[in-house]
Length: 98
Image 1 (tube, rainbow, N blue to C red):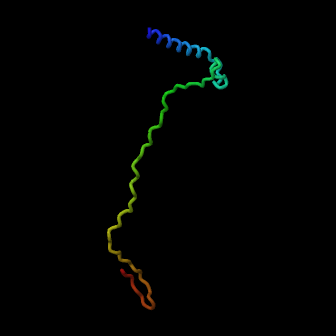
Image 2 (image 1 turned 120 degrees about the horizontal axis):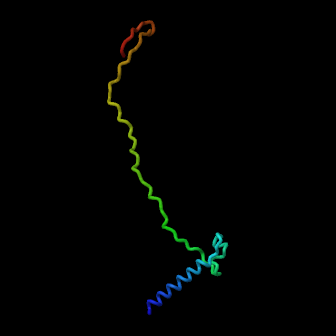
């Protein structure tokens, strides 16, 4: 007997749902303009949608390598400099290496 009551209750609920679907207005007006469901009971729409899809988390890259100044040039003795021939006062000085 209990299963019959259960099936009867499920049938009544399904029948009321089918009646609500049939009683809805046929035009494409929005639900707030049409006054809700056509029975006189104002019920907002129930939206069944898939779960929202979120963007994957951002990818973090390793920081760029720090900039290091180039190593100093190995020590080289100063180059000798060529001095061109010139007059130094009243004396002529020939060209020579400094």
